Structures are given as structure tokens and as C-alpha cells.
Figure 1: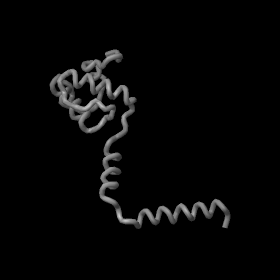
Figure 2: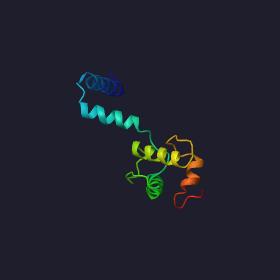
Figure 3: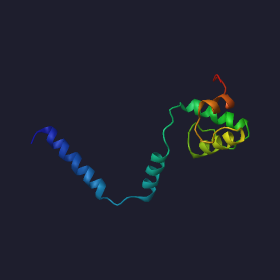
Figure 4: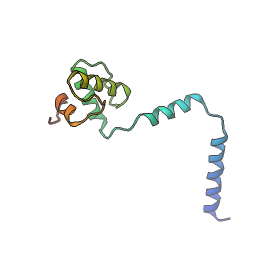
Length: 105
């Protein structure tokens, strides 16, 4: 057996052991949360700017740079209050209305 075949076989055995092992509920919950939270195409700094602009307009949310459930909910509320399509996604119309600092709107 070649060296690469041995490595491949070891990897297969490791994966099989992981599959057969009982799942820890906390780990499974973390994985599901990570999968459910879609990664933001914006930098953490830009997300913080949007969150700060939402907070300055009266929305309650953490300014943590994470585009998660609370940010989407606050954005959706903001969109409803300003006559925009309430998608919870930062589209051009919302960005223009929100006008976070250092962004041209």
C-alpha cells in the first residue's frame, strides 16, 4: 500500500468514526446555527455601521458586526416603518434611506 493510499484509508476510518459517534446536542445546535446564519458579503465593520445606523433610527439591536437574526429583524422593522419592502435584506433602496456613515446613498 502506498503512502497516499494509507492516508486516504486513515481519513476514511476517521470519517466513519465521526459518523458512528453519538452526536452531542450542543455541538449539533452550534452547527445548525452556523449553517442557518448565512455569511455576510459585507465586512464586520460595514455590518457595524449598518447596525449603528439602525440603532440611531430607534431600532434595538446589538452592534456586534454580525449579520444575524437580530439585525435582519431590526432591518425588516426599519423597512416597514419607512415604506420599503420588508425583506430584512440590505437592498439599494434601504441603504439609500438608512445612509450609514461613510457610505454614499
